[in-house]
Length: 319
Ligand code: SF4
Ligand code: SF4
Image (tube, rainbow, N blue to C red):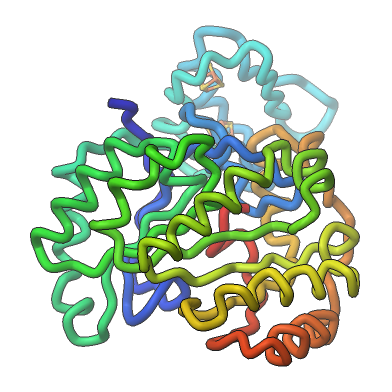
C-alpha cells in the first residue's frame, strides 16, 4: 500500500463541502497545473520551506546541517547572511527542528490511518451539528487509492460524511471504483475541456478524467464540479461554452458547480520551497471578478443547478 504524507489537517473548514469540515491534505499530485496555489502538495516527498524574511541569521541551522546546504556568508552587513543551497540539501529537516523564528518549516508528515482517524473523529460533534464531515484533498488523494479506501471505510463505519477533492485522473477506472461506495461527495476539478490544451498545459490526458467522471454519474455518485478560471488558459468564450454544453448532459444529476476565480496566493510558497522557476504564473494579474459572469450565465442557460462563485483556487482544488 502506498502511504501518503500529510501536509495539513485543516479544521473548521467551510469551503470543502457541506457544513463544518476537517480537510486532510495528502501530499502528491501527478498533474502539474502551472497556476497551482499549493505547490507543497505536488511532490510526494517531504520538503523544506525557507522563508528568507523570517531569518535572523542566528546560524542554528548551519550548526546542524551536515551537507553544507546551509551556510552563513559575510556580505559586509552587520551580520552574516544565510545562504541555502538546495542542490546539497538531503531533506533531513534538522534545520526546521532548531529554527526558533519559523524561517524553516517542514511540509509532509507521515500519519497512519489510525492517527488521521483519531484527529478527524475529535471534531465529530461539529460534523453532527452542521451537517459536515471530513474532506480528503491534496494534491490528489487518488494517488493513494488503497490508503484512502481504508480511511473512507473507517470513516463510514463511524457515520462520518466523506467528501473527496480530486481531478479524477486515474488511467484505470478500477482505481476509483471501490471508493464510490464509501464517498458521499466527489468534488471534481475540471480544468478545461480542450484535450490538446489540457495535456500540453496540465501534463495529463483529459480522456480518462472524462471517462471517470461519466462513470461516477452512471453509478449515481454525488458529484460537484470545480471550475478554476485561469487567465489565458480556460477563460475564453469558447471555453465557457464548452463547459456549459458538456455539463448540460449531466444537469439532472449534478450536485452543483463551484466557479473559482484565479488568485496568486501560492507565489510565496514557491519561493519558500525554492521552486520559483516552476511557477509559470508569477506576475500574472488576477482576473477581475466579473470575468466569470459569462460562464455563470452560460451554465444557468443550460439549467445547471447549484452554481457558486468563489475566489480560492488552490485552497479547495487540485491546483
Ligand atoms: S536557524 Fe532559522 S533564523 Fe537561524 S539562521 Fe537558520 S533559518 Fe535563519
Ligand atoms: S534539510 Fe537540508 S538545509 Fe536543512 S539541515 Fe538538512 S540538509 Fe541542511
